[in-house]
Length: 195
Image (cartoon, rainbow, N blue to C red; front, side, top):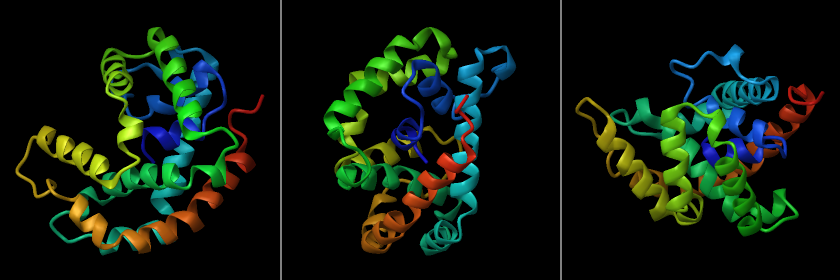
């Protein structure tokens, strides 16, 4: 899952929101030195990633990605899943996407002091440039994927990967609508952040 989905699967606290994103920024961070609610959010992030990465339908989707991009299939799917969460927002949340997005941005800004430096920079950029609204369009996801391709330190064919996702859009969307409720149920059943 990508940032929006991890926040969606967090608890409504600043510490949980930070912890649920921290999984993507953990390098060099002493997790156990963080507040316990941040650690629980981090543990929830790991649960979400394990469930997603091992789900048979997600694995089937990864197999659709061309061999030259398959090593990036997880990133591609994580980001397009954020797109489908926005497209189908009303199925999963009583608040509008815009209201929830504003809450997430507010909480991330308020939790800045709990974040490692790199995470602070990324979340500040995320908020200032309203990444989540950009993900509402596939071309916004494509732009984000192309930006990632520029940061990869080895020669790759990742740029333009949105074209592949567009080819399989309907199949990915169908899988997402089946998979995401299962993920919600798994997070609820595991209750990692429930104290």
